[in-house]
Image (cartoon, rainbow, N blue to C red; front, side):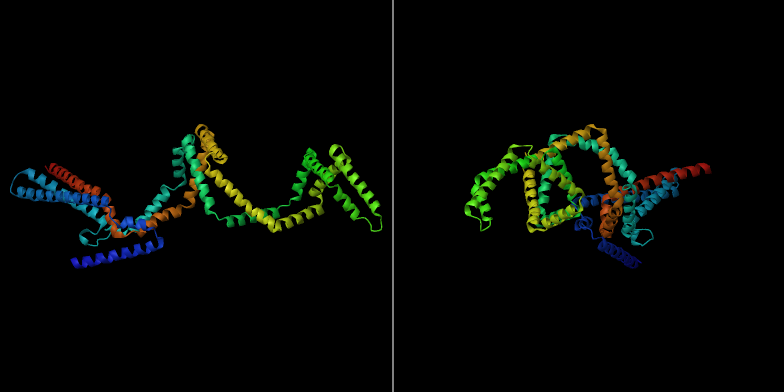
Length: 456
C-alpha cells in the first residue's frame, strides 16, 4: 500500500511539474523571479525551523490529549467517579479537533499520509489556478477605474507635488536630473539620423504648404509700416559710395558698349555724362525721402505683394523657385547642419548650471510648485490629469498586468513554491491545530455536560 501511494504521488507531482514547465515556457519570466521561488534564503530557513517547532508543539498537544483520554477512560472504567467522564469527553473531542485541523492544514501543502485523497495538496496541484484567480482578483479589485481614481484622489498628488517642488533644493534637484536626461538623450541620438529626419520634415512641410500668399501678406505689412525704407536707404547709400569709388569702372563699361565706329572722345563724353547722371540719381535718392523713385519702388512692392497673394502665375513661379531652392544640395546641407548647432547649444546650456536654460527651467518649476501648492484649481487639474493617465494605463494594460501575475505563478516550481509558502505562513497555520485541540476539548466538554444535564 505504501509503495502504491508513493508511485501515485510521484505521478501527480510529475503532472504538476510538466504543467508548470509548459506555462513557464510561455511566460518566460526573468531568472531573478524563478531563482527567488526555487532557493531558500537564510530568512526562509529560519522561518522553516519555526514551523517545525510549532508542528512539534501542536503534535505534542495532540499526544497529550490522547494520553489524557486513555487515562480518563481507564479511570472511568475503574469507577473513579463522574469527573472521569467529563475529562474523557473533553480529551476525546480535543483529539477529533486536532486531527481534523491537522488534516486541513496538511491538505494545503501535500497529501495527508501520502494518500492521494481528492482535494488535497491544494497548493502544488492548484498552483496555476490560484495564480489565475489571484490575477483576476487583482484586476477586479485593484485595477478598476473607480478604485484607482479613489485612491489617487485620497493621496492629493497635486498639492503634495506642488509643496515639494516649491522647495528650492527640490527644484534644483529636478532641474539637474532633467539636464542629465536631456544630455543623455542627445548623446544617444545619432546626428546622421536626426539630420535626415529634420531635413525630410522641413522639406516635406515646405513642399506641402504654398509660401506665396504668406510672403505677400508679410511684404504688404512691411511696406504699409514703412519697414522696407531702411533697406532702401542701405542699398542707396551703398550704391552712392560704390559709384564714388568706381568712377573709372563705370566709364569703361559705357565706353566698352559703344559702337566701334564712334570716335573715342565721343565715347568718353558719353561715359562721363552717364556716370554723372547715375551719381546724381543715387545722391538724390539718398537725400530725398520723397524722391519719385522711392514712391515708384513703394508702388512696385505693394503690387508685388498683391500678386503674391492673388495672381496665379506669380504664385506658381514662386512655388517653382521654392522647389529649385530646396532641391539644391547646399540648402539640404544647411538644414541638416542646423541640428548640430542646435544640439551643441542645448548640451552646453544643460551642462552650465548658470545657463539661461537651466535658470528658466528652475524658475518655472518653482512657480509651478507654488501655484500647485496654493491654488485649488491647479491642484484639481493636476489630479485629474494623473487620474486620467493612471486609469488609461490600468484599463488599457489590465490584461498584461494580470498576466504578469498568472504567468509568473505558473512558472514557479510547485515543490519549491509549496515549501516557500509553508515556511512563510506555516507557523500561523499550526496555531489552527492548537486552537482546534483547545476548542474541540471545550466543545466536547460542553456537549457532554449538556447531554448529562438533559439526561438527568
